[in-house]
Image (tube, rainbow, N blue to C red; front, top):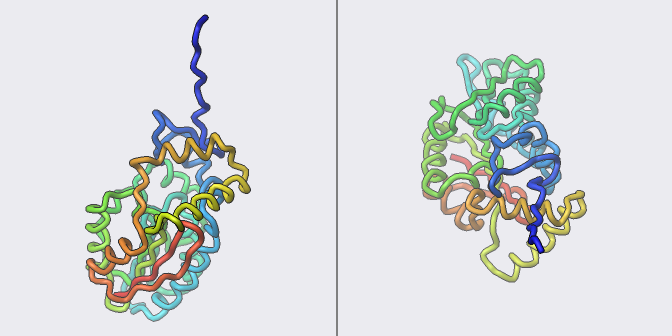
Length: 251
């Protein structure tokens, strides 16, 4: 009798397919379906955007309007957060928002979705090599976790060097719990959360498998140490929902 091995459908939800069991932002249909997928995958995703926008008020309203000022959204994907920030501060003269992403499909769609805003541009470039101007505000929204620890350190140091005194960096990251007991509880709660959003068991398992070696979350203390080693002595935890945390770091 012929032994046939059943192949799993390589879909991790929302029509996003992976290749060779590995997650990639450049994979087919990822950019097109990214918005609905990330909102279902990360608790309080939209609320995080709103909090970032509110915090930005404290760092961009007193800029020197006699010269150009740039603020950066790193790993901007489809540009949803960039659009919100630029819209919120459209009335501030000489304040410009820059969304940076290395995936061509993401940038193409970001430009397509872009609102009629003269203070916002999207650049297709690697955030590690982008020529930043001195700034009062940076955002890294779920992007550091895809970099090696060495490159994370390099990027955070670059951001710190390009921040003006009193400027801020907001970082949102998926984290791992340092204590196994709490990590186990949150893992089960997160699986239940994804079930509640309509993901199937197969999609959840396949997504988990596809992120191995791609997603590299650290503990909260490791994230705080990373910021501290770059020079940020003032850091506050501003949000937490299951494995997802937000930090405000001020120079």
